[in-house]
Image (cartoon, rainbow, N blue to C red; front, side, top):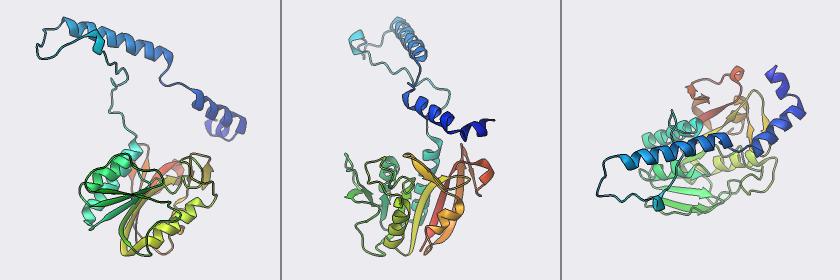
Length: 254
């Protein structure tokens, strides 16, 4: 029944619009959390005083959404970031280059391997080991075969959809894959991740999704060294179309 409703356009549009305008958390939850905050504050004021720290209502700084049962993370970004960093650390390249991935992952990698971060949007901080290169993934500012170690995690599925200010282009993914292959050195490694689904489709303007076969076809000049798949919070070695939407992690070599 649920899958049938998803295929009914008016129902899908209604769900999408509801998600856009929904306020998280709800008003009731905000009131409940704020009440709990002031209850904790009153209890704290009644505890034995610590003379080293002043406590005043003028310095209240409410953080009312952090009392969670689990550590609040996006499991896909957590898993794929750890996967990519591990691959780079094990390979020990002289230099690494990343195109468009999550800045936190790139920053951590840069503290172990000198890393260049390529993006259309400038990085607003500076740390040793990390350099920034403004560039477009469909026209990378590197020579053919220049990079021995390259990553682009959850990026190529977005290119051409305009979500991040890039020009609209129905072939943005194909152009990106071609450029990543072009700049990779012989023997070099490319680490990428993309959404996986039962069929290739565009979820405009969020991302595209791919079948495993289509991902492989995007990199005809590269050899697949390793693959794994994230479904929810689980990592599996093989793509399972029956599970529907997931994230594929791929290590290619030239």
